[in-house]
Length: 346
Image (cartoon, rainbow, N blue to C red; front, side):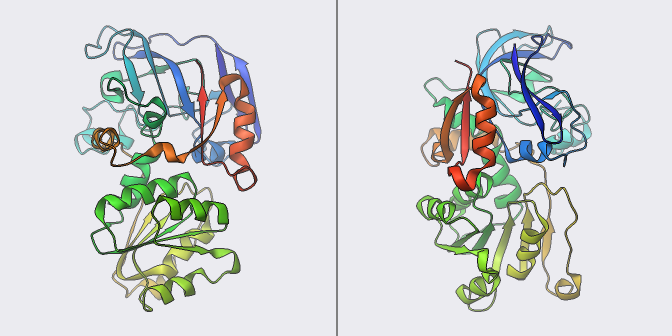
């Protein structure tokens, strides 16, 4: 089968690999019909994710058709149309019982990280019964791909961890796909103000279209002052970091109001300073999280009901044999205006 393979920092290739087989009774092998590229995949290619070693097939998002199941799988069968969760969970360990599926003792974020992932024609899914979701008849496949990771990540790590509430003020630093996913799902809680901050005017224009009440281009270094002016000098109740670099995390520290929350979503490959000399007395909370996908069933119903349209995030389409072009397009988003790309096998 064709598969996209990480060869070490800055190295990638489309290769022929053996089709995966059932290895454990709880496994399923899924024929991937559509997948996508995540910002985390770009972090892997930079060498920021030590758990992902050269030779790994990347990708942790997608939809497809069940090809085969292990003897322990009873809720799925060959031919079922399924959503692949980016998080693999056994459903039985201590962490899974606390709905911290990302820390599953035998799962977590393993697809495209410590085991081969979805940017291939086929993928093996461990713990299939608790790591796959049936796709409702007539559902938009491309919308479902956005439910593998990006929508629950923006919602859980940004909106829920950030304690977004009706009437609250929210600043989202980073108007890339994950920041926009946080923007879309934050509106479920009716905050009074959602301020989107980015360097890219095109992405800020998209943010306004998606529901941001204010946008701030931070290229002049004055974003914190602008946000303070927009909030009568107080700052925001929730500051969501959706980039994964030191500068954006430190900006969130300047934006948050007393009693507020800084919710980190970004994948950080390098240290960032925590300014306790100014924050120690401010009654703020700082949260970190890897998505657990505990909200996927709820978000699936919300998307099906038309309350959120995640297909707005999709800007480009490619075939699997064009995946190197897809990575190039996604990696140069400022030039190409890419948000999420769909990679199809069919």
